[in-house]
Image (cartoon, rainbow, N blue to C red; front, side):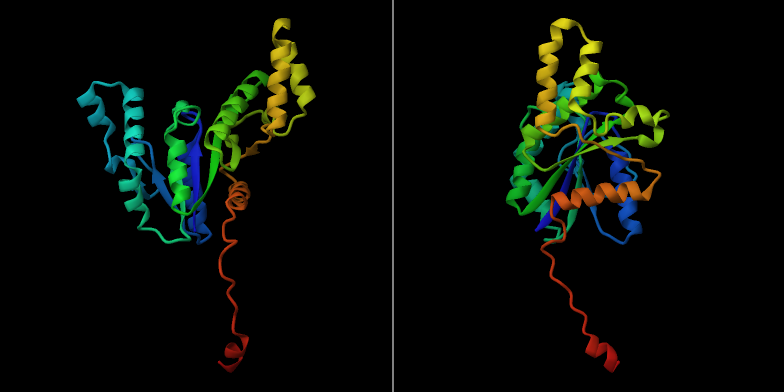
Length: 267
């Protein structure tokens, strides 16, 4: 069985930085992971790329030949990837052993994980090839400055959860850049009734029923829990990695290694 993280989130939320920091952390702890680039618009990487969608299709070529813009071209590339799952992706995955750990760095187009079925079909293919997959949803902590933005971030994350139907870990990225951490910490594990009160205070009275329904949805799906990520702290990275490992049951099917003490004494 293989293991995989699907790293998603809005553009600029720090997905590639997260992948780079995760790779460096695992390298330090002598743990092997492989980073896969699924962004056809990516150019520079701070980590070794194990697999690259640009080997399958080039965004520049698509834009030039089809006359598409950056967003339309990227969607075309991802749909082309979907059409080649049984060929290109299957062939690439054959290069990895059953217990390998892959991290997929995805594009930031929100439609890919909200309603377009490309990533859903992608993860279903991974699961068919015997991979345990966890979604890692990154949200920029600097974006969480008031309750309205927090609810907006929760709704986007919930949309991805419903669409992909996978274990889900929500991360507040860029905590090392936040100047007023107390303002963000208020939203790490807030009380629903406090969220509702603040939301009603900020919005017009005619939205109170809508506000109540939104808070109930957030509370029902336990989407008010985010894990802060401070890349300056190895303990922060390790804690998040342990949460993800738990979701995908990493290492639970590994054979127990028994040390031969009698042989050691003889030596």
